[in-house]
Image 1: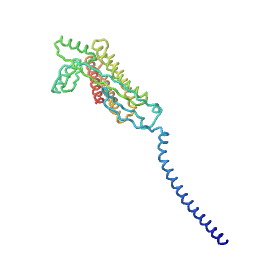
Image 2 (image 1 turned 30 degrees about the horizontal axis):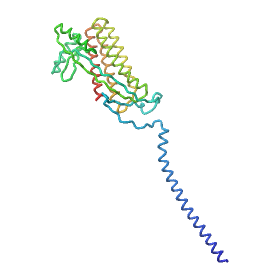
Image 3 (image 1 turned 45 degrees about the vertical axis):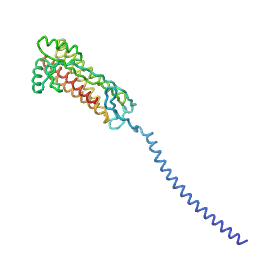
Image 4 (image 1 turned 135 degrees about the vertical axis):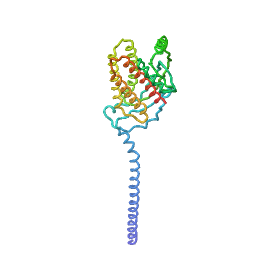
Length: 306
């Protein structure tokens, strides 16, 4: 009996030792796996939670198409300035399509030269008579007297020159159109749209000023004041665009538009610095600037539709 009790006591102590060892082993496994799983779950869940909480997190943008003519679109995005959201940038960003229609102009060409110096000489003579004297370069150096939105106006002027035994040709200049997709706040999108509308509007006003001045419906002083008003409007629009930053995709569109506006501001300022009493010189300068606005607009549209 005593032997049985001793053996039973030893067996109980042995079982207790085994249980303790097993508890330690399973406990270690539990804590190890729990730590590993916890770390795994933390690494898996944290980015998801962060993306939902971080207002600066954006889904990747799709690739943009920079062709923008015919059935293809030019797409660009206007981001927040300095990657920081101010009150305006917190407004919802939308994507909107903008259609810029093509434009055709009809120039009165007084000559086309292979030699640029001959073209410049002819241009200076034309300026002294009130013509634009603008040298348009393509495969030739073309000396332009004036351009019109209407082909009928160009034909009428050509007939008048013909009656005076002055030879001229009608030169058609085509400005491409473009369909663009812009992603930005509604205010910025409206700023881009209104810029293109402004350019077209001011071209019409410039042509009207030229016709009125040459037909003595306005004085040179009135013409200059109208030019100053155009300059002020274009400058204000340029300053508005200057507040917009752009992505790499949009830089060609928006930066080019800013440069186009500022270049024309400089030309318009030059007109106002002439003698207002010299009607012929003022008329020539306005015609020159008008044609330059058209040509530079064409170059810009060709660049963004390539």
